[in-house]
Length: 343
Image (cartoon, rainbow, N blue to C red; front, side):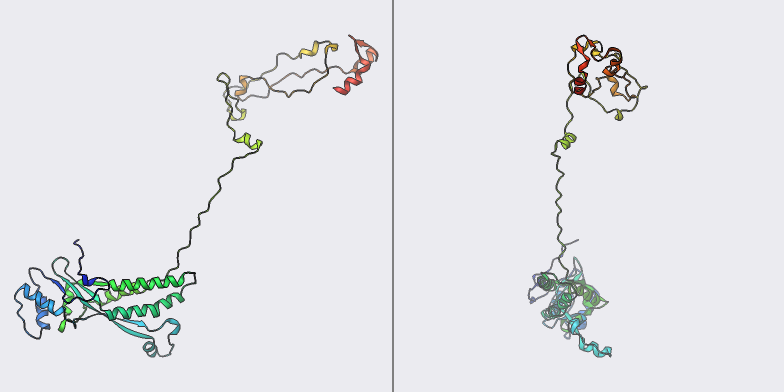
C-alpha cells in the first residue's frame, strides 16, 4: 500500500493553507468535468488536465469553500441539569442542540489513492471541545465511583480529546467531489455523513476509566530446614558404608524374591552357663540386644527364631536340698539376699 502522505496543513493545530494540494491523473474523469462546469458561473476552458487542475485548486482554496460533513444533536447540559417535560418536543428543544460539523479540503489525490481529505474548521473543533468539557466530562465523573486521582484522570481525558479532535482528518473517495457547489462549498453524499458522525462519536465518547488495581506480589517464605536433632536426622544425608558391606535396607521396602529364610542360633547354651559361681562378678547393665549382621536381612523373612537363654536357679529352689548354710565352691548361700538385691 502506498504511504499516506498529507500536506502540512493537515497536521494538528495547523492553520489553513492558502492553496489546496490537488493531484490529477493523466486522464480526467468525465464526472469531474461536468461538476466543474456546473459550479462555475463564468465559463472556463476545460480542455486539458492542467486546466482542470487549476480550476479545481482555485475553487477549493476559496475562503467560502466550507463543507458540511455532518449534523450532530448533542445535549446542552449534563444529565443532572436536563429539563423534564411531558411534551417530548419541548424537552428536546430545551435540552439538545445541533452542532454542524464543518470542514475544508486539504488534499485531493486522483493518482495513487483516489481520495480527498477533510480537516475540521476551528469553529467546529471549538464547539466539540466545549461540549466535551462542560457536558461529557461532568457526566463521566458523576457516573463513576470516587478514587484519589479522579480529577487528574478527567483532565487527562479531556486533554487527549483536544489532541485527537485536532488531529482528526476524514478521508473518503474522490467521488465525494460530486457534492461540490458554488464557491467550493459542498455536502457529503451517499451516506458519508453517517460515517463522519460515527468517527467523531468514537473520539467523543471515550470512557473515563479508573486505574487498574495494583498487583501485590505475595512473597512466600521458603520452608526452613529443621534445626532440632530429631528433625536433623530426617534431613541428614545417609552415611557412607564401606564398599565391602552393603547398606542396610528396611525389610518392608524389599519385595520377597526367595522363600522365607529362617535362621536360628547354633549355640543355645550361653558361655557363662558352665562358669563356676565364685568366678562370677556382679551383674552390669545389660546392653540392648542387636541382631548380628547377616545377608538374610536384605530379604523379607519371618522373624528369627532363637532359643531362650536359661536362667540361674534361684536359691529358694536349692534351699530345700542343701540348706541355708550350705556352700558351693566357697559361695555362701546365706548371703543370697545381698545378691538378690543387686540382680
